[in-house]
Image 1 (cartoon, one colour):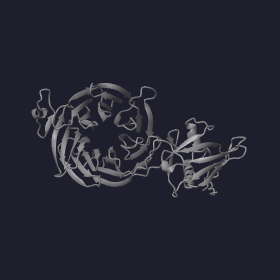
Image 2 (cartoon, helix red, strand yellow; image 1 turned 90 degrees about the vertical axis):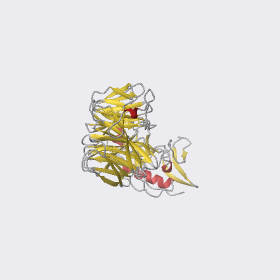
Image 3 (cartoon, rainbow, N blue to C red; image 1 turned 180 degrees about the vertical axis):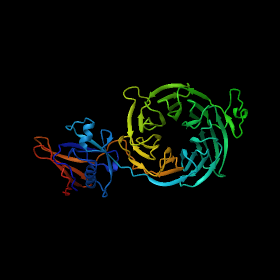
Image 4 (cartoon, rainbow, N blue to C red; image 1 turned 135 degrees about the horizontal axis):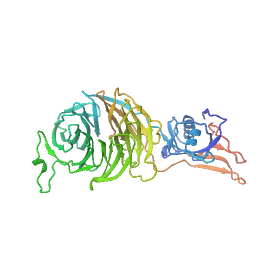
Length: 478
């Protein structure tokens, strides 16, 4: 087994490798290592164990979790920070490292790109020149859509079939417009113009069954709207027949909710009737859309510019003016309000989005021209910096698990392809090992690993029961 450069003068500690990725399981017996060991040395050790206990022949890059956070320093520094005793066997969970996202396309626009949303293979963008654009995920431009009279600040897909689609755009012109797109003919109709806000709109989100949408505005109001093609008033008369605009039919909100003191910067539905909003007034509010009131409030110390909710982790991420990303449990009533702080950006964080398939992953975009891929278990450093933007990042989206998309004030949309690692099982797994003990002292003399019909000697202890440091040399098959 390849040697590893550990500091032999440092004390030793016992560790046990565990994983939820069954294909990478190794025996779960304790190993003695020096506390000065660092992640790349653990990786060397683990790869040699894998080669001895499985049919894997190539080296694999792993990340290591100790006390639920990725190991980014020496083991000694990490366990000291977590107040873990060196007298205990330390569980080291390992997961295959995520591959770096691959840059795919750069979509050139005529003005700042302030809104982006992806649905399957289609990308919808909104710009400061008041136009919407539809692209394919292969970078082909399909359509430019005029209609708004001020910059577009948010977009969202409502429905999509092979032939038709509908989506909504929110603008600083105080309106949200619902559009129908005939994909076969590549033509768009303005179906409804949603009027009711008294200042520009900043945020929009569609509920889970796609029947309602919520908008947030500089007028501090949260409004709920129907996404249906037709809606009835109490007399059964079509509201959209009574109210006409210069293009499309005017729609009025179903409910208006007041509570914020400054602009609403982010809106997200967290379940069928619950909405979470962020605001420039330093607060996050949880609303009941049926009762029309605030259920819960979280107070911050800086203006919030964006938020997102993950149904997988049931946690909220926020973007702020102080360069930090914060993770909240919106239902927590005990302990610290902020569960984790993620620090790496050097300027305002403008946008955050969760992965739709992994409860630990999210992306962020900031005024430092960077998009970063994060894991919630690594708060001190992102997994990757996604370079390519030449000016402020204004928006990002990760609705399609394969594509990370972000828009900037350099008039571009950058696309990155993300290929997730192999899925994990729900439980820890390991390969079978056999231990031979001294009958008098009960000390383990040998650890053997069963590999098919052979046994491999992996570790040895003295007959007095004391543990030798792992030598990192491959043993011969007996």
